Length: 134
Image (cartoon, rainbow, N blue to C red):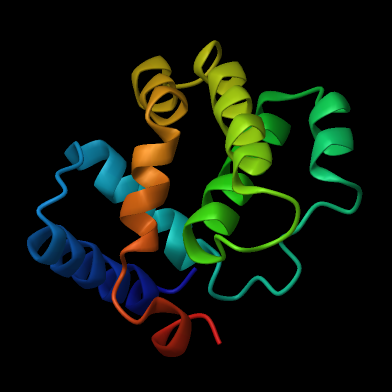
């Protein structure tokens, strides 16, 4: 992940907050910045199998985190992708809940409980599809 991406998405997140009035805890804002920046160079971030099958085959905390991140990215940036936004949101929430038992409980519990709110925040990022994710 390049520092330029982090810097650019930090600015975008701040702009989105100011534009929408949506407030996120600082730790969640930082997480969103890193999430978005980390996907800039990923062309194949989707699971190799279905999201549900990937969920059922999770064995490590890192698997759950990766799947939660993918669900948050997909539902925030590409809300019309695939089956149904609730499908991906439910998998993302449950994945982050699984992570919260082993890694940074406060952060991942918050992401799990407020997944849809964070997803909606990401969805408001101005001109995101045209400007960042073409």
